[in-house]
Length: 199
Image (cartoon, rainbow, N blue to C red; front, side, top):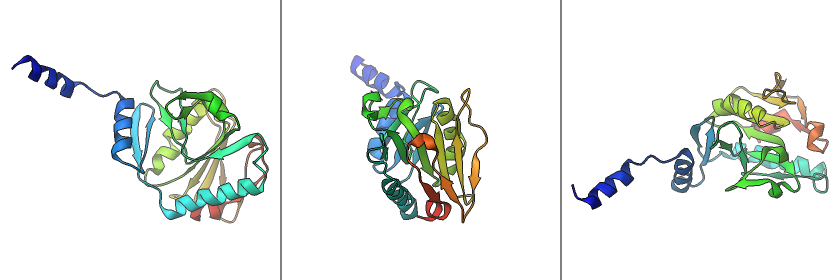
């Protein structure tokens, strides 16, 4: 085998880092959400209409509650750098962040966890990630509040006040109830469970 072929083989055999693999997958699968949770690469397909509408209606409620001018902003699809493992990051469905969150840029489109006040996930086909690894990752990152619209089990979970890298048991809300957004977010609003689950 000549030196050129050996070089080509070496390149083919070189393993990608998780971060490089995530970048390649994100380019190859537009519309999909690629994350690294606890050292595991995850890919979520594009959301369905009800999923998107749940987030739209939540954002409208935040606007009506006066989030603009409160020192906080809502953003969709920004990366949250996770301190769990060196390459870990998540992309929550919706985040409420400090108004100046862009000053906490870490790398790529990921921002430091200290500027996140609330993260929201609406479950899709990979609902087990939202209910398992993300609970652990967001708690370890010190995210003050994590809201899950769990469409698989027809309930909304609200995790708050992590201590020593863990959330206490969540508050659980059923259809017909309203979920109060924690005061740490900076706006007062109650969100109907049915809207969060159905859009």
